[in-house]
Length: 102
Image (cartoon, rainbow, N blue to C red; front, side, top):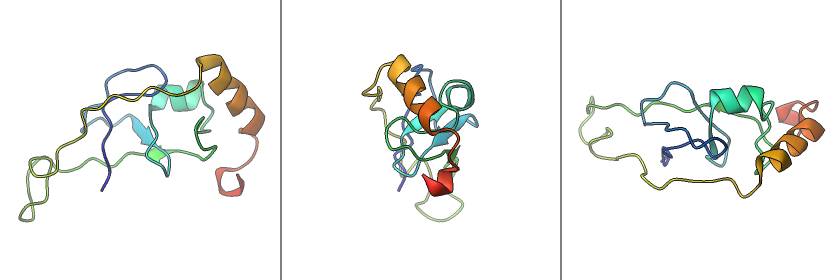
């Protein structure tokens, strides 16, 4: 089950569980769409993969026991291990390779 991390690892903006601008990689690294598109060039600085929109977990249980009320989002904030300039440099080196081929 997705953690639904509460913030962008690059700019630290809030990304609540209902955020439509939250993006994740296959390892659940979480960034805002602004950073993914304008800073990272769709290259995860942690794994080198691409990003997809993070799904929004239902607020109310439409099926018994399945909702944010039952599986809340994480409250642990994440910060990238790399500086912004290191992230940009990594993205520049890999953005020309299609995510499926990275």
